[in-house]
Image 1: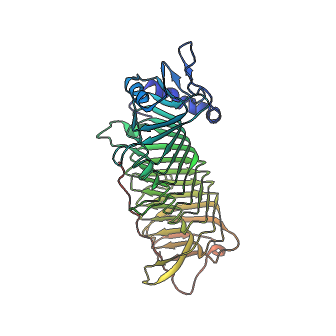
Image 2: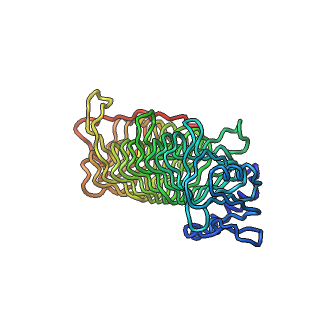
Length: 412
């Protein structure tokens, strides 16, 4: 955080999460400045100046409305019908050793909305009629939160500097958050989200841009570490827009139905990449494991891109072809570097580089066994493409490609 300073409670929460992520997973109580035990989880890094207990939804809403920054509202084990708004600097947590189930909201109003520096922990959100959890603030923390069955995004994070000045300089921290079986997993617009541990999986839907695991757009900054994004009907991870950046480290992106990781219109360099993927397993995705169009500044370091599944697509050659490539670099993309990654058993090709007209594309991966074609470079006469001859394939005719932009939704 480089500009506006978040509330004291947010600083305490973030510092504790950085210092003790291991303690977070086994949390069992919440510290309080009072001599009596508050009953809230202690290991999640919250220091409560005061705390209030609630055993029903009405009491919880009253306690939240009256809570001052730095305080905790503690829920007994049970089910609570929302919606709930967590004010700035306040924590909503389950009682020691238990979890709380949160339901309710409407198609227009999320089940839970977090203010600046707010915390939500040890909660299960089920069957939200719209967005399950919404953050419209610079800073917030979610830890050990499970969301399933949301009819819109399981978690939506929105930053608009005109509405919330300074929000882009904050960070929304997620630890061990599970987003499953909703219409969309994580949606981030303009904000900085840092997510460690957990998953976004098994999302399905028929709406435009639905069924994605993660979407980052409108200048968002996304940091994923040790997160699993899998078995979504749509794209696994979508990174969209000239000001949007993403770092994906030690992730698993697996069995997604509409591309694994896809970047479009991002604008970085090799020195300051817009998308960096490190040590990740990108497997069994349909059409392409990692792809980009009209994009610059993408680096893939180590990891494995394998088992990409072919799907029939209408291509630029006006024919239907089975497309299943490990990497696809399309439509004037460049400044793309692959360093030490393993490519194997991709259905059609290890990689296809098509229509790259400027920048430098450096490929220094390893093509293993089981891949039909290796790296195919076509329609890229103006590009400096550096690939070992042993890792190239030259098919008898050009491969058809299909790389349309994916639609980006407006959730909040």
